[in-house]
Image 1 (tube, rainbow, N blue to C red):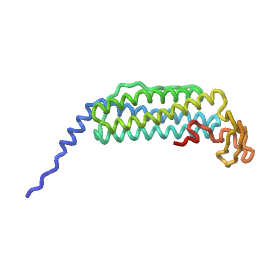
Image 2 (cartoon, rainbow, N blue to C red; image 1 turned 90 degrees about the vertical axis):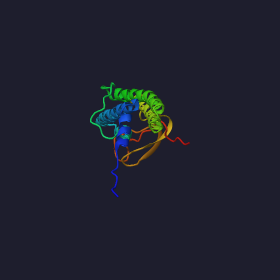
Image 3 (cartoon, one colour; image 1 turned 45 degrees about the horizontal axis):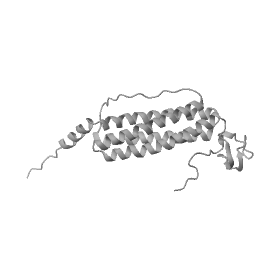
Image 4 (cartoon, one colour; image 1 turned 30 degrees about the vertical axis):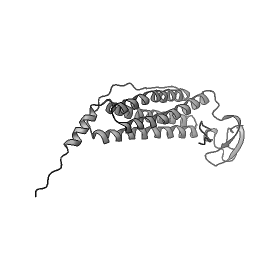
Length: 212
């Protein structure tokens, strides 16, 4: 008996159908947005490092990495649902901010807030179009962006008011270089052990010590 050749028409048809959905374009728009956010935050981190805020720069880079992984998931989902494509036309605007370090952190908080507002809409659209898995992806991402917004809001205010290394009550301050620890309402200007500048003191951030 002659073996039947496998047909790929079903897969191609499925991909073509997905390419006609709004969710397809929303994924592409989200990929672009997250990719750019990751790059913008890297630039803010570089600025923080230049001003001597080593641990602040590390925290911003962590969030930038989060954004890159969000972009990765959106890209992978497009590949899974539609395969490779030469171009996806999207109509969207993206921010190009510049300013002081405090400005950069405030802009980042605003950018994250915008994502928390748009992703629920994208999730609802995906659900209506029958893509519950993509709706779940948007909802999960939105939760992370909300935590990012809170962190950036806190950091922007702390840098603006020069309270990044000040606590309302005695706190443990740790040097990220040598591990020296001190309990007080303010961190040292220079580590008494290794002489590292204040910018190397570990930060106290929102959600610290949270237990569920």
